Image (cartoon, rainbow, N blue to C red; front, side, top):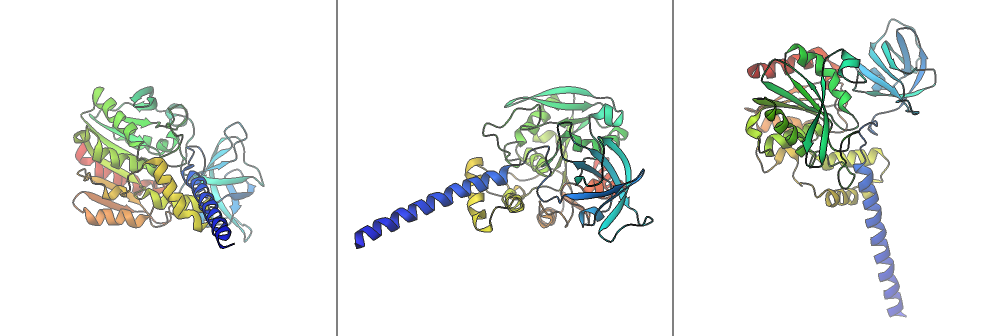
Length: 377
């Protein structure tokens, strides 16, 4: 009887362990699910209460009270879904206690109606540089290790190019926010679609690696820029795109051509970000360690955070980040700036969600970037 009970207990333990591993793998996949055209799970959905000619009333929420200018998007029903641009909160209009009224700058696509479920996005513009901003550009293809990567190239008079990589839950449309600024400063800009984006090759495992492998696409963009006349490049990235920029500045064979790096809301510890995203998607707390372990195994990722890479950072770096980021820890950005004060400058933006530092204060953001870029002009 004792032998039978021991065998039963062993079978039960093995089955339980197998179930835990399977659940951890599923949770790990959940943590790594970051489509480029979907909102992050940390972004709350709001309800449209009413819409006027130049105003919109939304659910009263901390998100609805954010300072600055944002895109407002709704569910995609096959036509891309509605997209509008909202400005500051309007206190001059009457509203219900459970609502917030913001200035409605424009409706870029579709229509917003009472009862629609919507959420904020950092992408203020939709389309391409011509349709959104009336800026001349060329569609280019950058040879990458997995295939051709689509890019928008905007010409400029300077010999230093800006190479831009969007972040989690975004597409190249995120770069449109800052294109007028770079155009005014005469910098050529290459806005890259990296692996997993629409029109770009997918990773072999169909998963996003938080920049740990995607940085090679940015490396390919550096080679492309040098081949077509760039003497130096500045790498600009948001979120995991910032991680790509940081890794490329550390590891690229052409890192000597990287004059500077601009990081908006950098993901400096992908495991912490993966835990945050998994939690926001409903993964039980008990499964989070297994989820991260499974994700690490599937990605074969570097275990050190990006700011503690064995390849040292030698490039002047500007970090634009804030303590209200729920996805990437601002404290790590501050630690990196404290650790390398001769190389790294941190500009803090309060009240801004992940990868939306520009949205919270465009003028201050662009002035910080302008000052940083002055030596490269």
